[in-house]
Length: 439
Image (cartoon, rainbow, N blue to C red; front, side, top):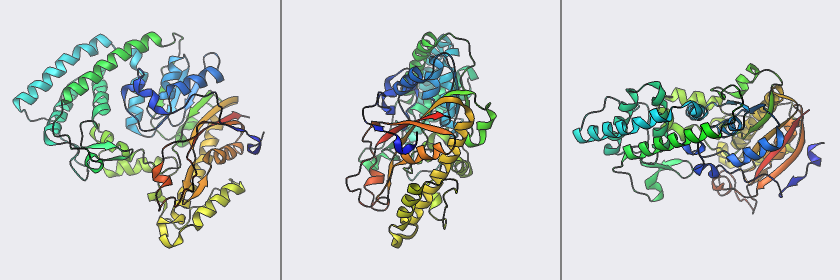
């Protein structure tokens, strides 16, 4: 079957993959995440495409939705993730069944007492704020920062059995008592008419989160399939660099969602977590993460004279779409079509790299489900799902179907911006599931 024969279905049997559904479910609710898909989508995929115990792969694992659901169902879960904070969160979830809930629960009262004494006495914290972390306005108000640093003092004095779970509790709550929020990118609360947070009960927020983790860990242990297998694994590295560390043809199912062609800066939007948890100590560390990212960011591509599409991508419609983007708004220089075409070309080049790696990892006949959204650049519609499917066909896949469970998604930064898109002319952003079969 060629991509041209694929029927794009609106009446898909997949439930809406939107990540929002994870916010109230055990384990998945441990940390907020701006993007991804729901546990329900993964449940559907596991039930439909894999029978018996197998190996489930997520090359862009994020905070571990695929991995947790695969592990719960009795499969061996393997993931890759370049963002060290997201990888840390995913690994903590996969260790939840090994957590001693009684021991962790017993530490909460001690943590609360430590925090109360520190605030009451005015004790100067031993921990310092991350020196290289910079924001246009103070990230924390003075009273809040004092409490945050006191909490980090407590964590520094604890053993590894619980320290990581308290670090995760801090990471899960840290933005809520800051002067910033996600709208959807990280920005000042004042910019959207919300007041700064002058004071906050940091101890209560973290203590409640730890207590939630205890209850979820108990649930996880009881709900987890009892079959013997390796614990879920997540490699903190690029899939492009690491996929050949897996045995060729060893994966039975791939479920993932690579970054969309929407210039959302995943790493930059987790800067608070990366710096405050010690995963980054300088802008060089952030730059390294940008270099590892799937595709690149428009800000990195726009200054280049010309980013060429990989010669192996021979599809004429893809090339014509990029040429159309490149021709738009030449008077705007790098802010016009040329910069955005560079950005899109790099993205599709990495689609080819991803498809090649996926083909290496999957056994013959295995399925890959790739959740991906379309885009509109400089007013030019970019059907990313169809373009990716065609690229995958040239890398050893057959295209089984393209499902469209979400016919509308939020994307004002792409549609309404005169710099990025021009007029959208009524075109909509949607989300697809590209279903591929390893030939």
